[in-house]
Image (cartoon, rainbow, N blue to C red; front, side, top):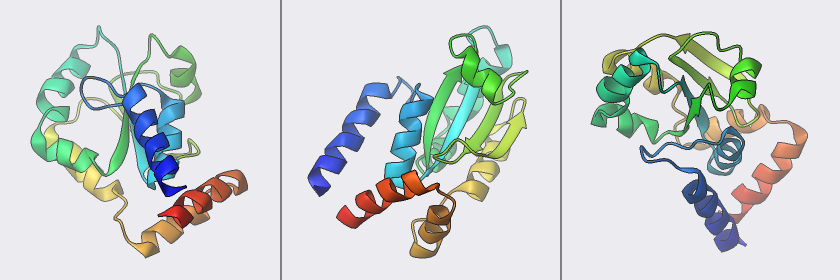
Amino acid sequence: MKRIATVLVIGLYTLTIGAQNRMHSLENSKKLALASNKLILVDFWATWCEPCKKMDADTWSKNEVKDLMDNFVSVKIDIDEEKSIATKYGVRSIPSIFIIDANGKVIYNGLGYKDKVKTARLLEKYAIKKDENNAAKWHEKLNDKDKSIAALILKEK
């Protein structure tokens, strides 16, 4: 069973990951976040957004930021392609960075360009460290359906 869960998570991740090691499906990122006990880092952007392009070049591509992003399931949402998601989260301007849990609950949202130093501080603040105390706190915030799924996955580890 452990092998099946691992293959399923890896397959889900592989199917939805983009060229910059970020997923492009919020629903799949929620499933992966649940299975991997991570929060979701959402980058709302658009192809025409110059500050978004600058953030890609000056922030997201830097090794110190990429290393911290490993603590999250990272998803990049184009607001023109995913208007309903942008509307659901009240995105009115970009770039916007959200940190959400596996249920989609917003933990943090920030608007505007952030350099690598500010972004690194943000990611450090919200990274879930892999220890039992944090896992227990995270598990308490899940709804009953997700707790059952999480318990099954964690039991198999």
